[in-house]
Image (cartoon, rainbow, N blue to C red; front, top):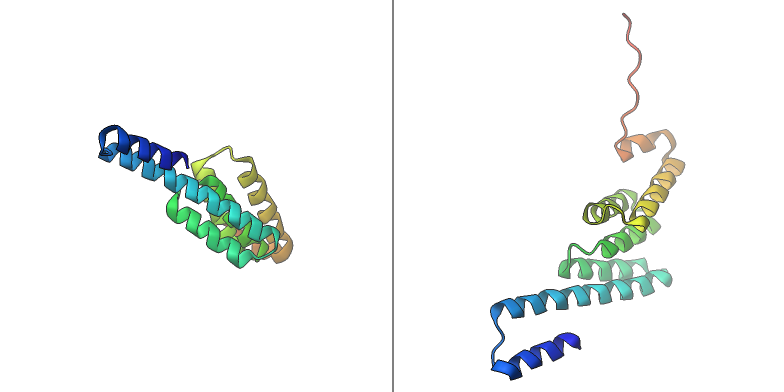
Length: 138
């Protein structure tokens, strides 16, 4: 609504909206729509409808690929559907955008723990941790 008011005000003030103003408004509008898609996704996730939640997060990221909260929510939904590698990538993307994002870090650590619990010794290969080299004879 604030965006609508800004467009109307700009239009009524001079009859035309400059390209810079239009692009600024468009970016802000996309950010708002992305946040709204994340909110809807969180509602679906709370109902354990992870497929719909993931669709909402994908929509959010199409609008604003730098939305760290969308990446975290996407990762949580992926982890809840046992798509652990995808989840870890999503959390990693969130941390690239916001390195101190507490939920991204917490969920990434929890997902890694779940992978280790589920896969045991095979977990290190999935997580990209190399096994120690065997000792060599001198």
